[in-house]
Length: 94
Image (cartoon, rainbow, N blue to C red; front, side):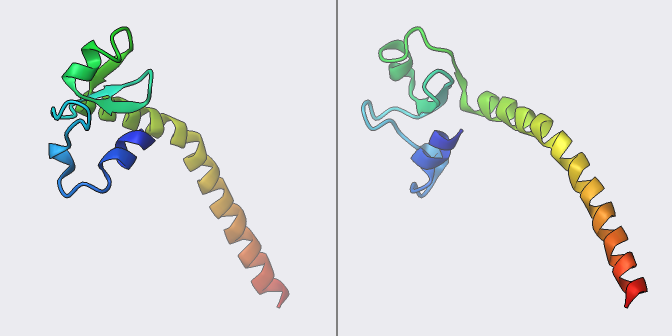
């Protein structure tokens, strides 16, 4: 996902990003290489790679990130409770 952001970050309109090799619209994300590609790239340089439409890949990666963040959210809430308890304790002592 990093390379998608990196490759389109400097463009005025990322929806119209084109392949530097073929001049075609970058509409696919190669999971194998972790990079955006055009339809020509998919047939030539990424022939046997796993790739998907950028929008579909984005949705899939967002879901994976949400799943990874669930345990973190639980720990975050537990830490908030600990901090709150410590703050109460500190107030009582002073």
